[in-house]
Every structure is written in structure tokens, then in C-alpha cells.
Amino acid sequence: MFTELQKRIEAVCHRAGRDPAEITLVAVSKGHSAAEIEAAILRFGHRILGENRVQEWREKAKQLPNIDWHFIGNLQSNKVKHCTGFSLIHSLNSKRLATVMEEQGQKRNHCFRVMIEVNISGEASKHGLPPSDVAELLHYTQSLPHVEVCGLMTMAPYATNPESSRPIFRALRELRDKLQLKELSMGMSGDFEVAIEEGATYIRVGSALFNQGDKTPT
Ligand SMILES: *Cc1c(COP(=O)(O)O)cnc(C)c1O
Image (cartoon, rainbow, N blue to C red; front, side):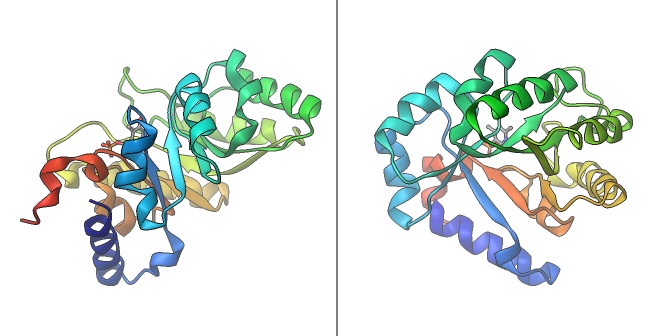
């Protein structure tokens, strides 16, 4: 539930000595209808949503005006041209994709704001660059006037214990510091509290907002 989540964010900020204003909640609305999104998120006044499929997003964007949309999925090059409606794309993961963004950005007079997605854990199933390749991609984007890298994003491997995400988040923060970037997009329903403790500036939370089981506080 939305208010429950906000309380948890405030509590962990308080414990960690962080200002809640430093953390942007991207409410992940993938797989949910406009009506469900309205009931679970928008009626609380929250307007920042994340989607992971371009086609699904295009349908929803028609029904839901005045949203600050974020793209969090794996982006195919042929879909980049549709993505100027996202204020931030969390998943730049190749030079090729950056090149396509530059071409489309030039054509449409749009600067794509992005995070570089990093595969810290090295899991084969995860998208994202190995940490050792990030500096090179960042350097490449600095020659592209229509692509602005704001920070780094990662997904921790699925685990029942949120503490197992901590070394992943810490490694992402260290890489961000080394590259002198500003933002860190990390933490989902199962591990956003650890992510905030480790310095997240964007958290991407989906199921905790829609899960009916969360309605009764435990
Ligand atoms: C689905 C998704 C999330 C949200 O995950 P939950 O566990 O539902 O909070 C966050 N980030 C990405 C990239 C996702 O695909």
C-alpha cells in the first residue's frame, strides 16, 4: 500500500540519517491497468511511474496524462524513437543503444536522460554491462550531445534476505563515486530499505504497492 510504503521509506531515512527528499520513488506500474494504477498510486498524489515495455506504456500514457514516466526495462534499439516521453531511461546497456539514442535525439531535438545499467552480480540472466565496461561507455556518451548519463542502475539477484543485496548496492555506489556521477537507481520491493541505506537516489518499487496482502499491516 502506498502510505505504508511511504512510512517505511521515512523510517529507513530516519535510521540512515538521510533526507527523504533525496530519494525518488519510481512506482513500477508494469502489468497493471490504468484503473489499478489510479487506485494504488495516483489517488495518493504520486505521479512518478515506471514501465518496462514500450508498447504497454504507449497504451497507458494515452489514458494517464500528466505522469512523469520512467523506463526501467530492456530497451530495443528499434523502440528508442518512441521513448522521448520518458524523463529518465534507467537501462542504457550498450554503445549501440547510445548511438541510436543520439541519432533519434538529433532527429527529434530531444536529449535522452539515462542511467547506465550495471550487472554487478555477473548473473547471466541479468541485463547490464559488467562494471569494468562502464567507464568506456560513459566516456563514449560524453561525445553524444543528445544523451545525458545521470547515474548508474542495478538489479540485485532475487533473494529472500534483503541483506544479500547490500554488497551489490555498495559496489554500485563505489563505482558511481569513482565515475563522479550523481544518481543511483537501486532497490525494489524486497530490498529498497537496504538500497536507501547504501545511498539510492531512485528506488523502483512495484509489487509492494499492488500486493493486496500488504493492506493489513503486520
Ligand atoms: C519489475 C521491476 C521492478 C519492481 O520490482 P518489484 O519487486 O515488483 O518491486 C524494479 N525494477 C525493474 C527493472 C523491474 O523490472
